[in-house]
Length: 377
Image 1 (cartoon, one colour):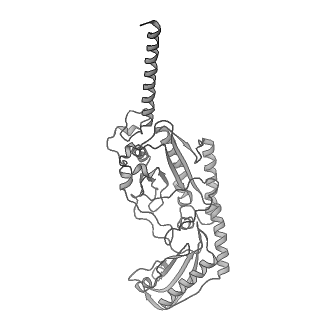
Image 2: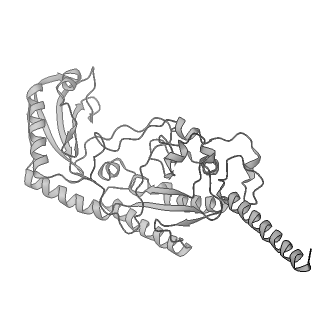
Image 3: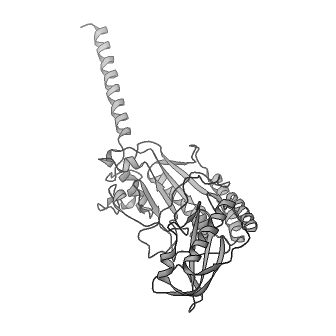
């Protein structure tokens, strides 16, 4: 064999070895990191614990309850208004399954409801009131409710069996994310409330339609300008992640499994409050036959600003969680357009949120209050 042939053979061998090494490198990058991975230079101190609090399977097994922020079902198809300056991705917010019982369902409030007193001819039982209620608790896209006055406490409550009432009232919400109460919905409210009043022997006293519709429009204008839903995206820099790997690190930040596949929530500090943050990724990956072989290249962190009290410091916690997960999972925090979020940008968002909280407080619609959760729903 000549020197030329030997040289070509050596070069060919080097090229082949290079191709094999490159393919191995690409394959290694495409394999998602799993929850049992150990020895990473960025691994958490707790990585040696073989018993993980949550695994990929938990993402579909845990059941939780939502706090209903309205008097009836949540509004339907219409999309929410364009959020305020700090708004980004829209996210559904779930509630911590480990919380104590949620707070009592919020009642009618003159701040955000049209209320019509119902003068009874005689005392009625709670059972009779429940039997007379309409089949649906909605007027158009707005929640409809009837309440009875408990004379012993002087408080209004949703009718319940065994109770007796001398005073009733009916109400409909002025506005929500579907828009303000309009003339047609007000008329439907009058018809529904009158039909109920006839069944229980009551005389309704309806407020002026023009005034209430105008009030609804004003409230909706305020809500539209102060509705904020904030979202961060955590993107993988190198290797992809498996659902279990994401759940492992998210659980160490305090997240628990949500009601839907591919969703985790960060519980609030106080019983009855909405979850502070929501973490979501591809639900198909979570429901795969072998989730550990599913590759995720991004997860989303979301904050429903108007649903979480300022006292929870939700944005600070969101920022801390995003930074911690990015570091340990070798990711980068971006906006929904894929642009990395700098500390300066984070500071500006935080300042915008403080102004928003102040505006909500000034209208007695503080973030996280029952009124705010109903209005921004």
